[in-house]
Structure formats: C-alpha cells, structure tokens
Length: 94
Length: 342
Image (cartoon, rainbow over the protein chains, first blue to last red):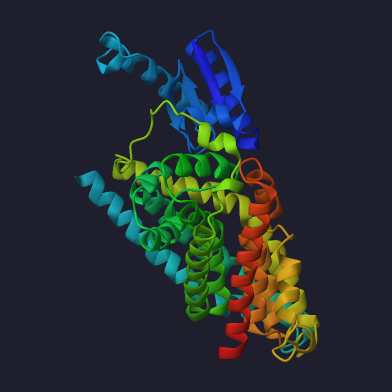
C-alpha cells in the first residue's frame, strides 16, 4: 500500500502524517507514509486544500486533520470501495 | 424521529440558556467589580476590571455561537465547488462572486498555493482568483463577531461592505492589468490527473454538519481564545488608564497622515483579528478616528507577511508588490472615507 500525505509541511500536515501512521498501525497495515511537500507535485492530484491523504494514488480526504479513529475508517473504507465497481474493476482506464 | 425531537428540544434549551447568560453579563460584571471586589465606582481600576469581566465572556460567547453557525454553512461549500461556480463566469460577475464565496469557503492561508493553482489551472481569470484571495482572510467571521460585539452592528456591516468592495475592485484592477506573465511559469504547465474535481454540494447528513460546526468551534475558538483574552486585557488597561482624547492627536481625524501610517504599521504586522480588535476598540474610545482604526485592522488581517512568503512560490515579486499596493490603496481609501463620513 502506498500512502501519501500532501501538504507544504505545516503543523497540520505533520499531525495528519502522525495520525495516519497511528491509524495504519491500529488497522494492522504495513505501509510507508510519504510526505509530499512540493506544490507542483501536490497540484497533480488536483488538491486545493491541504493537508490531504492519498492512498494508492487515490485522494481520500482533503483539508482537515481527522482523528486516528476517523482516519482508520477513511482508510478501511477507501480500501473496500476500490474492488467494488468504480473505474479500477473494469479494464483499461486506470 | 423522537430522537430528533429530543435533540431539537435540547438545542432550543441551550439557545435560551445562552441568551439568558448573555443578557446577564453586564449586570454580573458590574456586580463582581463593585460589590464583590469592592472597587470604587468610576475608579480607573474599577473601569478596567469591569470592562474585562464584561467583554471577555461576551466576546467568547458570541464567537462560539457564530463560529458554530459558520462551520455549518461552510459544510455546504468546498474549494472545488467554489471553483466550479467561478469557472467560466465573466469578469465582473466573477469578481463579485469570488469575493462573496471567499467569505464562506473553507480556507486557510497554508492552502493558498494549492488553491491558487487549482483556480488558475481551471481557467479562472487571475483577477477573479485575487478577489477570492483578498476576501477570504479579510472578511472572516472572527473579525465580524468582534466588531459586532465591541462596536455594534453598524461598524460590522461597514466592515463587511467595504471589505467585499476592496476584494472586488482590487481583483478587477489586477485582472485589467494583465499580469499573467508574472505568475511563475510552472503553474501553467501543471497537468492535473483530474480526479477529485467535482463541484457537488458535499453530501452530508445534518448530524455531520452539526459536527462540522462543533469541530470549527473546537478548532477556531480553541485557537483564538488566548488572543481574545490578551487583547481584551490590554484593551481594558487602555480603557482604564489612558487619558481621554489621548489618541485624538495621533489617530484622530485631524491627523491626515494617521491613515497611511496605520496601514504602513499594519501590513507587516501579523496578528489575528481576535487579538487586535479589542485593542483597537479601546483606542477608539480614547479619540482615535474610526476610519483610521478600520484601516489599521484591515491592513493587519488582509495582508500578512507569512501569506506573501507562501504566495511567492507561485507569484513573481513584481506581482506580489502590485497585489500589496492595490489592496493597501483600497484600505487607505476606506480609511479616509470613514474619517470623512463619520
């Protein structure tokens, strides 16, 4: 799993990275959390409010710092949603 | 359904309680100051203590309820939705809408750059983007609450009206000046992946919206309360100890240079509205002119050094300088206008 925290390196971005790490641990998932601080890189995800959470190149959350338990829910939902329908179940578009 | 009724009942009770408390703050402050603490009526210390005991809970109570309501309103807006509304609008309407949306779209200055890129790459004109960027920090709920609480609704309305006008006009002027070449070139080269771009109204239950209101109270009031108390404490000291008309010679109407000076001092200062307004109110009581005081406040909260440093990533120095100059001119104009009108 590929986990990214987008944000210019402000206090909120650090908090989000820490909470995400904690949430992943609670879910028993092994993943490296990378911080993306470059604006050009952030802009590629079309994110307009930082910090944002991106898992496997999918933007799951923007503009706030959820608590560890909220994040755990976002992460597990984001993971479950993927196989059901959506563009990735078909062929070609991803 | 019964659960909802119970919740509505609770909310109504809370509101009534809030109102009852709010109404009894003034007599309570007077009672504590003069009866419990035994300070003399009309004494300097008495005046300062009463001012502090009355204004602190008043402002904090107002702030809590307004931030809660604004938090709920904001849950209907996202930067993505604002972008969609603004995309493809003509210049004038775009500037007006951008200034209005700047007041309700969730925005923090750390996100100024991603937002700027998001707007510009979606084809929103530079001037319209600036109308948003000027209005968002300047016309904010904390400033409005403090102005309402400490000066009354007229000053709050004046601030809202002139703040929006400055955002609209400055953005329009920047648009007319055709400054696109002073935006860093890489901004225009970005090709976004296109995901996350929908401008739909965020689908949330009312429960989630109320939670959003609570969260913004926790976040905003939780952050500004020390500034409110500090600002009111300084204001209280000025209120009690600085002689009447002391400010008249420095910040009064007769001193024509007071407005530009207030703006010059205000621009590099970085303080949130919460700390600055109580001080400003106390100054006003000592003979400072309203226009001068409004100009000072706008300069402090609309133009801040950290935001300029952040925006430097996407704007060339020349454009930043033009941006600061145009907004400062607008603020100067407002300052003179009110000194002349009132």
